[in-house]
Length: 284
Image (cartoon, rainbow, N blue to C red; front, side, top):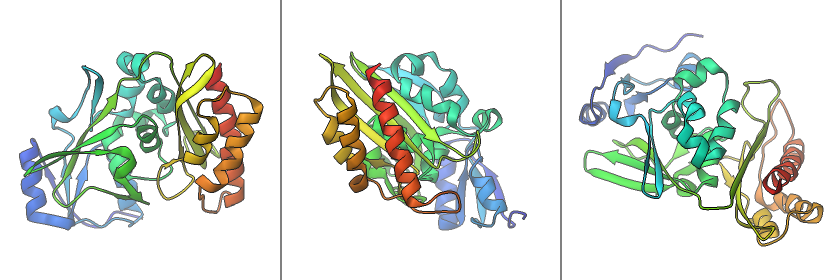
C-alpha cells in the first residue's frame, strides 16, 4: 500500500514546531526518524494532514552527563545510544537493549524520542525507561513539564502527551554502586518486534537483591512493572526458589494478548523463562 496524501513542513526550531502544531492541531504528526511513522502511513494506519519534520533541530539530539543524571535528547538515534561510552559506563541496560532494536539501518535512523512517543507495547525503549525510573521532558509553547516514564504510557500507542506538546528528551538518574542490569527478549526472527521481553535492574548488596525493577514489553498494552514478581525477589538472595516464586507471581502482573504468533499462555510462559534468565544474569 501507499501512504495517503499529506503536506510536509520542516521545522528548524521548537518555536516553529509549536506554531505549526497550533495551526494544524490534531491533523499534524511529528516526523523524527520516521521508522515507525512511515510504516504506519504505508499501511494506512495513520492519515495526517501534514508531517512536521523535526529531524534538523540540533538541540533535541545528543547525550549529556550532568550531575546525577544522563540526559538523552529525543532525536538521539538508537545507534548513537548503542555506541555511546557514557551509556555503556552508566546505563548498561540501554547498551544491552539497543542491539535488539530492528536492524542496523533502522537503528541509524530511528530515534529514542520517536519510539517513546509511538508507545508500541513491544518496543524496547519504553520498558527500559520504566525499569530505570526515567523521566520525560515535554515542552509546549507555555513551558516545559516532566513526567515519569511509569506515568507516561496509557495504553497501546497512547501516552500522556497533550495537544501542542513535544517530547524533547529523557532524563535517566545515574545508578549507584552495585547496579546491575539485564535485557532479554524473544522474537520469531532477528530484528522482529519482541513477542515478550524483560528489562531488569537491581543492586546486589551482601549477596541479596535490592532496588529491583522488572519491566516487561509485549506483555500488555504498555510497559508493565511486575510488582508482584519484584516483591518476591526484593531483599532475597538470587536462587531457584526465589526465581520460581517470581515467575509464579507474573500471572498476576502481566496481561499478554494472544495474536497470530503466540497465545497469551505461551507469552506468559516465555516471560517466566526470561525472568529466570534475567535473575541469573543479575546474580552473575
